[in-house]
Image (cartoon, rainbow, N blue to C red; front, side):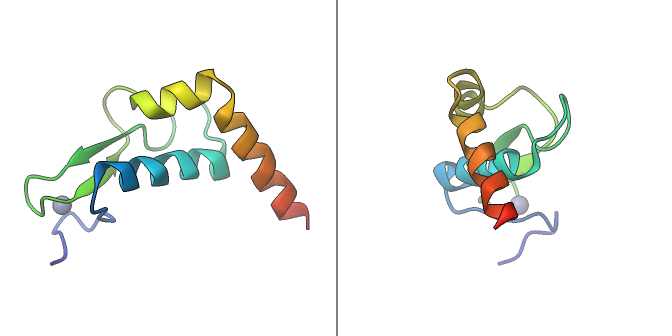
Length: 81
Ligand SMILES: [Zn+2]
């Protein structure tokens, strides 16, 4: 079933968070830009990304412990090849 919100659907919170973090690794969003969290949809009962609300805890942790930076660097190298 496809959601009337027309957002991408993820089948679990973990998958949505993985995508959220991957987007940040690829796009290097400026502060306050881009999706910040995931939520379970009332309509389709799958997970979507949202650009409003507080920062996702997993994303925040990867920003603070340097994991996100490592992934961004990896993508930058990939783009140069
Ligand atoms: Zn939905």
